Length: 412
Image (cartoon, rainbow, N blue to C red; front, side):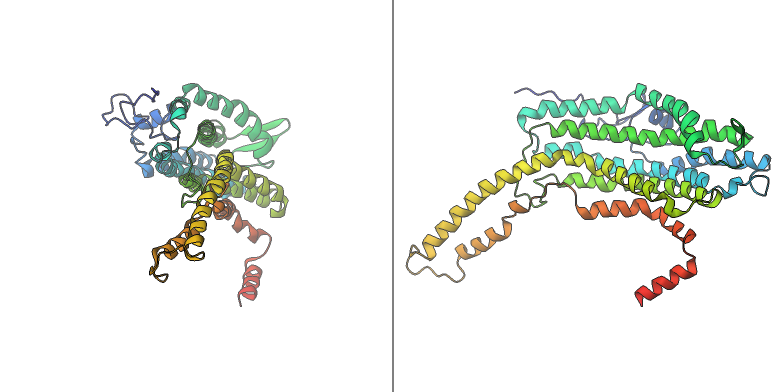
């Protein structure tokens, strides 16, 4: 049967026209490479074909968003002092957003690119895609690449950032209701400072675009996995990874840890500002913490649940088929050694039959095939990574000395 294959790209994925590079494997699919912003950053010599120049990219993006705010707020007398309730240097959320969260999101691009690049190829190298579904799998890869490179998608993200994020979400739910370095509340709205104009129309939109582009990438990834899960898969119930050969998918969960850490830092900065300047307490954010962590974990591990029906089916079939094989071997062993069927003079001790029976018992792991291609420990680790940046805010509820005393009592 003739199958369609994605057309091999003549240069490194996402490379700018004119770049000289060797042809890429069409199944080396990365959710990170590609798109208009990637092309712009590449032409600015801030990234190479394999997402190198990471340090340069982190420094340039962070300083472009943060340094003008420092300069403009200092010129306006709002960087420190008592001119406003929240001067720039004491705005925890601003520093967390531009000096920690944004760099983490940029670092995550390299991590995700390296961990996820071989995933599509793994489905083929492991022989997991049935011949009848090869064309569907190839179409899924090609479709994901087209969507990843979509100009329209990124233009819609820019429009959403300004029309929804800047003009509605930020003033309604994020901006503080006290005089700050970026704006002073007045009847009917806020008056922006010089730094506030740059913040509202350059720094914050850039940050929100980078964040929303990650959500778009995750959508591309989920859509790809959904299309692959609709293919006929050739899974092996006795595979030693205990997920019928899909164990390589668990690496994608770990790859997204920097994205979750970035969200944790963003939450911590927002909570800190409300605690320090609006009289809130850490306990007031219990619901937000639970909802955000649950949402992020669902986004990261949820797509892998698409393969649970396949794993359940292969475990049922495996229990039946391997059970039949084991029954056949054990019956023959019983007839030979317990019912007098063994040849005269064949020793029992040290015999190959006894060793094979022991090996059969050890290798018969079909019943332990997991229905989830990830582990509970991985989910717990991701939850801890997300919440870890919020941990220092516990000191706003319990003094450091009292906290240390309690820990010493527990440990000693």
